[in-house]
Image (tube, rainbow, N blue to C red; front, side, top):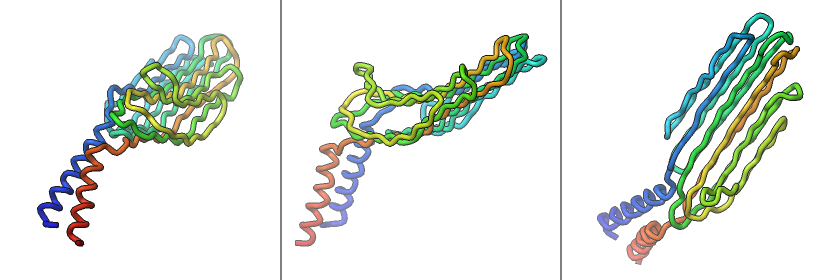
Length: 236
């Protein structure tokens, strides 16, 4: 096998690999943090930050409002990454409020990650690992965390989990046919002490790593076969 022939075969394999990677395409993205709070007639927020369509994003929002003996805090945090066929993130929300029963007091925090993507001809395999956690220390607080993989052709949930005042780890996987899909994760925390005495707080978190590995395409198989055949001819 000549040097030129080997380079040509290697170039074909690299091109085929690029074609494989292109079989997973991002369609739309929505990732944001949101927080709001109220203490008496003093309010802070709502405050929102929005992440870019691709790449890394690390940001947070925080609001705090206090008037007299009534106050609230809201917090939203996200550290997420979007690459071709690989999505990961840590979305976190927290809220707290305290009141003396004489006025309004509340906190709201949310972090949301959502991406629609397309899997090309031949489909591929998906893998999703991480955990969901939600906790509110007084009955009546909202603490919710969920993540789900959805088939957009009929909006059916391929896999998902939702927790309220619980912790759950997961490691899931399977196969996807060619088509459009959505991966969505959300953490929500709300505390209301509206004309109520006492203190309350809640937290919610989703941590995940998701990958889609496209099935080998014909071009890639032919390129790899070409390298193998050329190597055998060289040894003969």
